[in-house]
Amino acid sequence: MKRVVTFGEIMLRLAPPGFLRFSQTNTFDVVYGGGESNVAVSLANYGVPVDFVTRLPNNDIGHCALMEMRKRGVGTDKIIFGGDRLGIYFLETGAVSRGSMVVYDRAHSAMAEIEKGMIDWKSVFDGVAWFHWTGITPAISQGAADVCLEAVKVASDMGVTISTDLNYRAKLWKYCDDSKREEIMSELTSYCDIVLGNEEDAEKHFGIKPDGLDITTQGEHVKAEAFLSVCKQMMERFPRARKVITTLRGSLSASHNTWAGVLYDGKTMYKSPEYQITHIVDRVGGGDSFMGGLIYGLLKYPENDQNALNFAVAASCLKHTIKGDANLVTVQEVEKLMSGDASGRVAR
Image 1: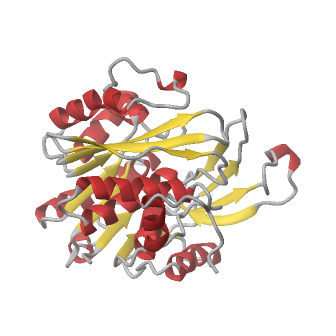
Image 2: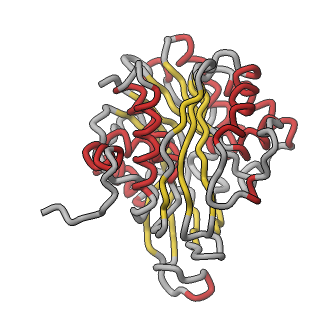
Image 3: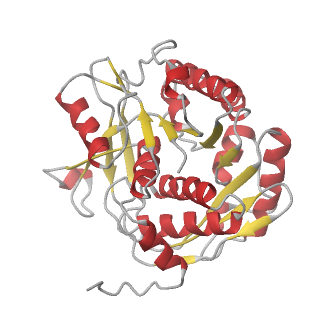
């Protein structure tokens, strides 16, 4: 299968065990993860050759993050070293009516202090068919945004397919005002062939809203048709985009969600089956697992967008059962769920 590159920050995740609050815990579980590294892990699990590009501190913690990528079969030889620290985020896992909480500690990380010219993008994209970035990376710092723009320009010149997950993060966009953020994201997204984002991403970044939908009032069922207007507006705003995809999460509580997705190719809107996720183990990385499944699906089923979408939704449904940032499932497990077997029976 064709080679993929992802670019972003991998972090040290520290979380109280189980459902403890920050104020209750004396210990933290350690996981390494981040939006683009999570996508890379998914693809590696599916047998796709993939490289993760980032900047790590040349210390023991940076090397632990590097080893996590290597352990999962992700290529790391394009990673550069520098800076003093790895970014950290703290996660308090919610339950029932109490939502999860994230506290970032990423200022002055190795990735936040990356600068133009540090990465040889022509070398990185040699023999590569697909490049993926997310809206988290340009939110880290102006330097990270500049390097991301370097990457998409070179990838575009070299004929590489470019995808993004818009991933709006209010707690990260601190170095610029809203108009500058929209300018940065608009320029980056203009280079993209495949655009993934939910209703909040489209509204916060570009002022694009679904017709007649307030997502905070949605319960068990989110109407896919309401997002057709978002997809059309996105394609009008970004004419290079060949496909616009939206995840559909209905939140009954922090522990019980419905999960589905839609894909619009400019003519047809494809809708996936809807899954009931009645016991969420860990929803962090759910969108990343969707993107990893989508890239795999679009590469495996280039003429069948319905299959690609169904694979992405099934893969990300399974991610909600897995502790940690990354989706550690196989193609066979995803295809089993796609076929309708959600029994969870023991495989003997």
